Image (tube, rainbow over all chains, first blue to last red; front, side, top):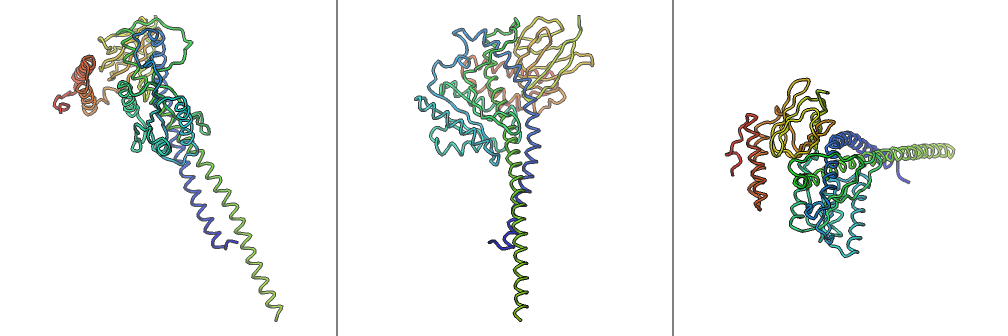
Length: 289
Length: 142
């Protein structure tokens, strides 16, 4: 039976934990709003960009001279997995889910006899994957110092990928990130970026004039397309991280509340018991006289 | 015939302009072109340069770099990798851009890359001069 003092201390400590989780929840909520806004702002660009690219790709794609970024190297022996996670923990299963998806993919690819290379973005994913797949690592991008991901970050990452693609270090690149559905649901997603894949659009094809030619435009736009996709993924990831943290902290706050209630009842019971005990002692003492 | 068309200028991070204009002068890869309502549909890549807009509310200038412009019957969409209002374009920003273009030019290995990066650098410098900033060579020759 814990003493009154112990109980009081425990209630106090749970109360201060609740204060912290509450504060973290509110910070995450504010950051989430900003991250969502950023994601929304970037959407028109990405949508138009992909629409034009896919139209170009469908008209040029079939030819033998199509850029490597579009048709691939013709092999799929070496896979580059770009695993994007958060820089910080305390966001529920967010990081773990993305890592789990990546692990499954790695296991599948290795079972099929492919070579796997890993590039991580975000400290948490690196920590979790390093233990098991340390020898597959080809790099890590540190965004710890970056407060709000900008297009420049995506460009840098895309440039790294493109250079190593040009040097023939991999055939297929896939990015892993948490897709933001809503505050309670973030879906870990794998998306192939190299060679580029496009959704079929139903929009009627407009007969455009191209300046310079279609092939040249496609060649100059494809690398930018990689950056655009990575940027979109980074933004989704940022929003998902904050969403996950918000709901995780909301749960934690609620649990702390419940715990405080339980401890308070126990505290009151113990106090009553102590009083009753004392009374019994006094009364029996008086009777003995 | 309508005398304005829908125009939008978007960068990856935000949408800068969205509204009707009567004329948009676009710095295309192979030369400036002016799009007016009813222009034939076309797509052109951009070179670093100044995008000049004439609208019902007056004229406006934006600095754009990288990306492309899509002209269709409905209007004009400019997707620029970098876009800034000319007022926000400071010497520091220009220095950064020029320095970067210069680095790309120096690092280019094959002939094709050198030519492309060289053109980018030249366009960048020309744009700087055009908007009255100093694309000082001394700033980026290291």
